[in-house]
Image (cartoon, rainbow, N blue to C red; front, side):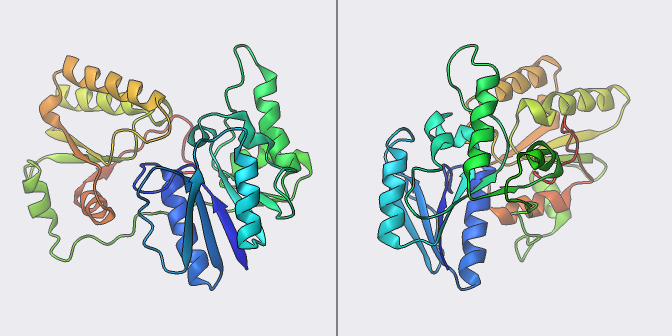
Length: 293
């Protein structure tokens, strides 16, 4: 089958949707499908995937997107188009929600990474959610990643499938990995309790809870340190930067700077090594555990 995949993110951009798209493309190609990626223009894409064709025709996500996608689909003779939907990855533009019915003959299957609506205009209210519902109703097929989103869309009588997202980080540290040496290398003593958090800092993931917890442990005399693994913010959502700055302010105000360690954006093998070196992994997501993450 000739499968086209459209995504607003892709490595080296930092974001879960981009990482997922890369893993999905690789898996489909491995199963003998012909995979074609349509990505934004202006970046050196880190695809390095056999049997995957990459096109960077999108100058800007907007009203011309449907025309570009149609020409791309027709030129590659695609059997299906899979849109990786997360509104922040498409600059919150309404045009993405109006794609069904504007793409020629190729059916459109939408993978909803979340159901967040695009920006329309001030006080748009219910209309913002309505355009997300429209995208689901008019697509040829809908994929959700978790039970919560499935419940919200199941009454729409659409062709719906729930496919959880697997980990994009294999348990595969460097060949010379040694947890004791890794801990020592980042300034963690043998007696320290090393807490690890992996992922971007944003309002929904409880970064402020982490800092308050670390402060409480210190007040109780526990020799704890917090390791923040990975990049602070993603490439798509600018609100993450403001929250990350807020976390930095909290750390400084509480005098915790020496207890907080940050790896910065690192390759998957270093993420694996960091997680394996921790005593406890702490993920205080405000909406609880979810197959979306």
